[in-house]
Length: 85
Image (cartoon, rainbow, N blue to C red):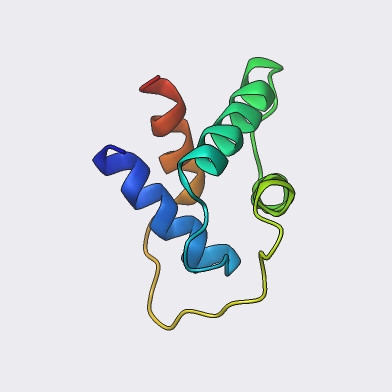
């Protein structure tokens, strides 16, 4: 994983309460592919879209809570991650 992917994993974990080991590399690839599909179809991903995508690939989403502040813009990070591929 690169630095953007590491930030993305952290942001997803903080925002959506995924399992401590999720998203793993395979799940992250699937999440980025789904986001890229939305973008390619002219759809600007919303936080609801992202929540649905993350839940699809990380089934335990929403069952964990992490204390701390997440200052990242998740949509911007996802776009950067998709662009890097």
